[in-house]
Amino acid sequence: MNKRPRQKVLIVDDEPDIRELLEITLGRMKLHTCGARNVGEALGLLKRETFDLCLTDMRLPDGTGLELVQHIQQRYPQVPVAMITAFGNVETAINALKAGAFDFLSKPVDLGRLRELVTSALLLAVPGNAIDRRLLGDSLPMRDMRKQIDKLARSQAPVYISGESGSGKELVARLIHERGPRGHRPFVPVNCGAIPSELMESEFFGHRKGSFSGAIEDKPGLFQAAHGGTLFLDEVADLPLPMQVKLLRAIQEKAVRSVGGQQEEMVDVRILCATHKDLSAEVAAERFRQDLYYRLNVIELRVPPLRERRDDIEPLAGHVLMRLAADTGQPAAKLHPQALDALKSYRFPGNVRELENMLERAHTLCENKQIEASDLRLAEGNCAAEAGLRDLTQIDNLEAYLDNVERQLILQALEETRWNRTAAAQRLSLSFRSMRYRLKKFGLD
Image 1 (tube, rainbow, N blue to C red):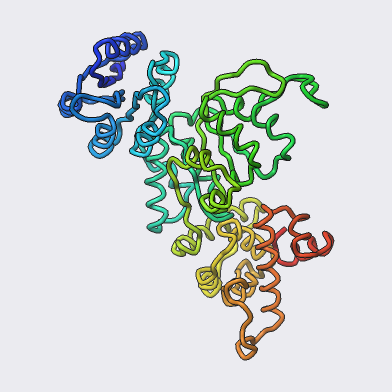
Image 2: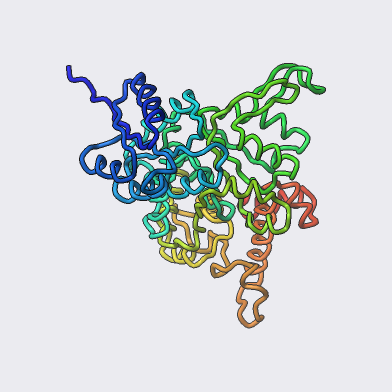
């Protein structure tokens, strides 16, 4: 029976004692190691041999580890690189992550942390097309985003996922997690805007029995639940400032203290975050801490809105209609060519989520399993916010026009309140009963 060859690690450091320490530690992990004293030697070894991981010091006699990271990213992108930096040099670490480093270690090297890092890095798989089945569409923006997801999955850097509501930010976060070395560990999503401020510390860090009224037993927090995996902070801009301070410390120290606890608990969590707001504008308005922003926004990934990838509307619509047919046990409805043209000309302020809701309603109400343009309840594909009030001579169906204006205003209120129907009704000065009627009328329920 053939034995699997031992994986090989390239260690680059000009200090013999450090190289020896790393070689002994990795040797006990049944790994083969090669040492290099500088960038030149490392480049020579990379040309002659195949490596599964590179560990490099930041300061080298003939260059920097950052230069080595960039070279490996360009020539050998399948090889993850981890940087070893001086203790507390956060800026260097962040620059390394932005350049494509998998992760970083601070000196003096914690051997337990080193073993965890190496184990995670060696789990990386060669990127493939597994995500294509879930990120539908072959438009240029989608192809670019697939490449970025594959690249980001091979890093441990925090990622800020920006994009409009309904564009699929959580799906992107899940794919980054699943494609990386943490894919077999927990993915814990949390909507930061849905947690009452007085419960946030307990929800994030856990609490001890008796620490406050109602704490009848010990409860782990979100950080503990995500240990070894990924914590996805959705709508992170909605975190109150006091919680932002505590979150920043947890990320920096990689440790949390539960409410009522006496000791800190080390946690190994990758942070991904998202919001539909402009986070830099929130920083400028002093509603979001600048230091936390720089910690979270090491790398930004923008999810394009649906209106920027109109070529994807047809395959997306087909997928949604097939899923609806499977859910109902009925034949799939077909889109009339005029209905498809109407969808492609619509600006979709609610993005993919709005497309799904729209097609679900049309699938239910259409006749003969064919969706006509009129079943979509669109007014020539325009949004009320962008169309404004038209000249009366341009309106041939007042009722349909007013319905579209009303629908768009309700949709906007729902998006702004994260689909909280009560809050959206209050924003529009509607009773909840009236709001419920309109949600049903416009297929938004």
